[in-house]
Amino acid sequence: MPFEAIRSNGRIQIALGFIFGVIFGFLLQKGGLTDYGVIIGQLLLTDFTVVRVMLTAILVGMVGIHVMRSAGLVDLHNKSGSIGSTVIGGLIFGAGFAILGYCPGTAAAAFGSGAIDALVGMIGIIIGAGIFGRLYPYLNRSVLKWGPLPEDTIPEIMGIRPAIVVVGMAILIVAVLRWLSIAGV
Amino acid sequence: MDSWSPYVVGAGIGVLSWITFLLSDRPLGASTAFAKSAGMIELAINRKNASQMPYYQKVKPKVDWQWMIVIGLIVGSFLSAFLSGNLAVLTVPPVFAGAFGSDALFRLAVALFGGILIGLGARWAGGCTSGHGISGTLQLSLVSWIAVICFFVSGIIVAALIFGWGVK
Image (cartoon, rainbow over all chains, first blue to last red; front, side, top):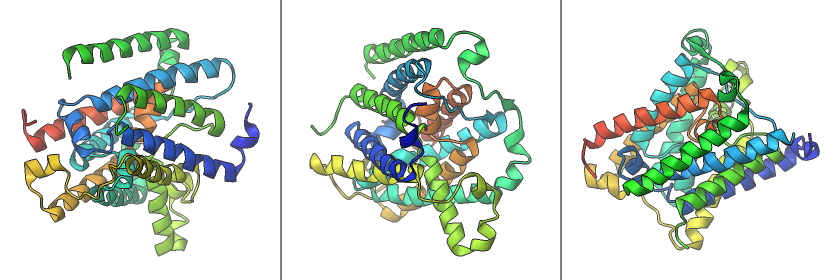
């Protein structure tokens, strides 16, 4: 793999993490995603900024990552999951998302632009993650193991070439974005 | 400019994800850093017990790439807001105040409770709106697509319950 020297250098990686975070935070603030009203507006389906940003990021990221992967430049890093982990955890997360009005990344960015409630939200996220850490040995023997889901990607599960799914997904995302602007939301 | 088009911001995040895969061999994510912080606090309280907790053998409580992402998020957003003159200390967001009044303590209590659910849920699901919602979905991971659908289905239902249907 190219870039091995950079990837395996701990100090460079800590600096890169910071730089990537700065760029990410800058973009989130410029996109208005540090605004409680924008995030709640998305969940109330009155403001589709969050969906526009996410779908565009997925579209651009997906095409680039798959092109670089076929050129042998990057590896994929899929997460494993299960119904008990992904679905139940996802539903708990969604409830918290609506109550706080920020997610972990946007809470940090919102705090950076002056939101004190986001800072308290970040403290809550640390507490919640700590509770999970304490419960982990029990959860990992039970609920997290319920209904395992394949770690594979959608093209692997469907047994077709990734390029076909990338093109199909790209068309779908562009269609949804186009439909959102026609619908005027 | 104060704000950029969501398409420009989204494309920027997409390009950023190329660079994180290329230079760091990692997907962009935010919630792991919060688990690391919780682990650091556990270690500070009781080093002996915390160093044996199974979760922190999986998620190492240390300052690393993932932890620095969150520090960078704070700094990057600060820079953006500062440079465009939008830096403003705020405790009760206007939309919240419009629905529930401007009591700061009430907003902070709600934020703390929401945060706890987010931290619990993100680690339970193995990722958040960044790790699953953007980085996982762009890799076409089935698990991540299921996760992000659950985030939004639950978020939309709970937001509707909180604010009531039809409130804008």
